[in-house]
Length: 304
Image (tube, rainbow, N blue to C red; front, top):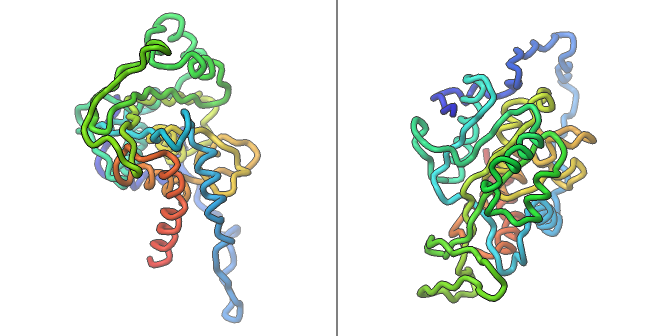
């Protein structure tokens, strides 16, 4: 596991996966300085409506059951990212970026010199082949996944695969036993479990593994890959296309458009809403709060 290096975050911007130095901008290609008589108009494109924000937030959410009665999954343990398959200096930069994003969300941070990774990012030759090998030789690793989810993961195509292990807990953090049959559901007794605001269970992400196919991500920057892993690892989300109403790093591997350089305002609003407050809030309540958080971010930017 590669651990973070203090002060390395400032080197992230524009750092490519292969470490190729950025080319200096040609003076002949620089935009001309505006004339004194020119009128420069700056502004923001039409703001998305609350309905559009809520729709996109729901579209990127990997749903499990009715979100009116189920929470959204998030990391409740201390965050410990780890990188496999990269040069040490590049791995350290990615880890610094991920930890920085976690600190902005007030997540608990594990000691970066000695921790067991719960967000593992691996760069491999063929992610699908790696998962197939694990399924054949170490099938017990998938025991907590539903058969449908397991089959979908093993059949998934593309340059990245995300394998998330989560567990349901009571609102006080006590584990809930897994249901073994339709006739014997798990039962738990607890105090103060009734509320119209929150529910009596939460879903904790125990570990997430993000597998990147090495040859297919060479045109991406370290900051893009770190932020993509952040958006897939801090929450149970799914990729989308560049046709989405608002820019999102989840469209990083869509070939029909130009992906963003990192987490977008929408991405940050989604994560800030997810990690704000207690974890046992109804999923739809969290999703409906993304628009409010997005507007808060825009107001903060306007005041800078």
